[in-house]
Image (cartoon, rainbow, N blue to C red; front, side, top):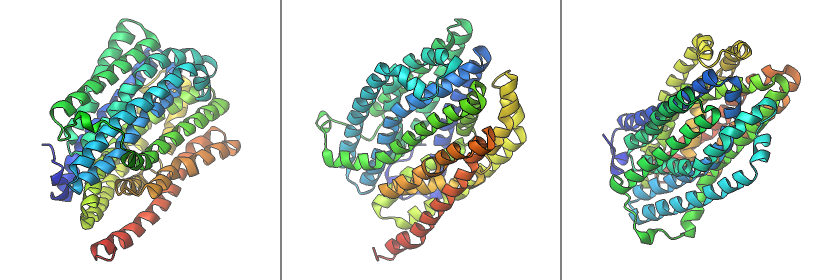
Length: 451
């Protein structure tokens, strides 16, 4: 059952979080299963080099499409608080400006990607035998990126309205389409990397059609032509908060560049394939934690906008407890089943030998990441862009990138894998400090009427 915007401020927090987080988790699960199966098909039917090629290309396309996600998350925070303050007109203007911003910016980046494709692929680590399959995969995917960007933007707005189940469907549909078309294009038609890219591109377009249908027939946000005008105060507010998500994705892209080059230097093509498997497992295994984080944002944002600070505080506490429990269960699962998990992806003996221990090290600090994820999400939901940006960038930007640059000089390829849990621990300590301060002082003072 869908949740109306008003119910975000009245329903029991635990039940409300469950209603928001479960569909978000299921949506992320299907999306990650889609990426996981896509990687398995590519690895088993084309080869481990194909996994390496996908690992090189996807950070480029996700960086461009993350414009939509950034505008969706930042604008979703503005929209949630506007709905909480009963300012429907601002919510509508925010949504219209998000659509225009996403389409224009994604299109510009796609054109740049087409003109500088060879340089981009080299920058992101396409070297040696990886170049040919990466190039075949890149162009069809690039042309579909504007549709993916609009899907990512729209999905965040659907959740901001409280319609988490529809957001879930928007993630499930492309997963099914991609898996079916992978079988047709790769296995039956033997189209190789081009077939894999074509299947993914069509799945993005199907997602776009579903999101378009939702906003035409199911959304509470009924846009008129008059709303499609650039409103610079709203654009500034969206940009301030969007910058948090886009900066994070920008740092993730820089990390991908550094990781791919470091992995190639210390382990060759097969080490990039190893990280390709690990990166997909990170999204797949952590889907319930990410789902709780996504379910948390509209609840916290709405109640912060409505001045219900006690509900905001309760939402933070409940979300961290649930997310931490799930993350601990995931950690135990990875420890126990790393070897059989890896064997599903490839028959390459080098990749199978190296990946299980690398996978365990990357997940080593996962039981504590709930604090970092929920803490950064709280400051974004509350519209506190500077703190949100600082905390969002803390793991990859302040810790993981320097560690990846330094530790392999002393420990070789092991230095790459051990960098992940160290970065998780350090960023969680910092986020925990700021979040505890906010909960104990800021929201308490709000509740007492001091601020």
